[in-house]
Length: 123
Length: 106
Image (cartoon, rainbow over the protein chains, first blue to last red):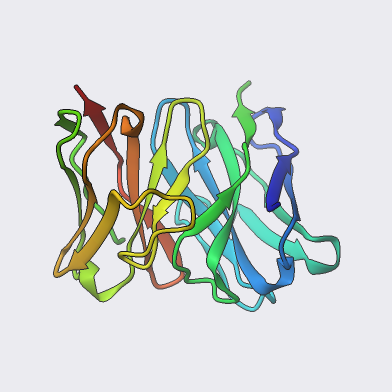
């Protein structure tokens, strides 16, 4: 059974940092691109960042570029999101998701999602 | 930056056909996909690569994409289909979601 489980969320002050993790199982992790998607309370989905199977291709939303860094450890079947200089507007539920398409960052659709981890940025 | 536009809401009677549109510049030149999200739940992929259904998604869900518009069609809509629906596509190496459409079955 395919599973992705996010962790690392919490309450953090503006300007501070947080690192999210995503543990994947039930599929060949290093065959697929992985993505982070967030959803602010009561709002729609926002794609945050994605990384190809071998970390050779990475993308970021303009809203997080220069502040967030995505990475993966294929040996540990894990995806990460380092979030620096956090802002109040980064408050959201952060989802980790797997793409249907193998290898490529630009995918076909996200077919497995975790339950999300909540990040709250507030003083 | 690339934008995808969806109607905020669509209403449909049970058993009828619901159509939800997603508009973007030359959207037909790229793949579109669709997600269903029920309240309090994670999104579920219902259509990928314009018109393909993942395993487990009912046949009443179908998709098309041409010109500037992608369309999600739900035939024989059921009460359980009431949810928010989001389209998504790619602009270079950036993923883009539409603003979402609330489907009401009444």
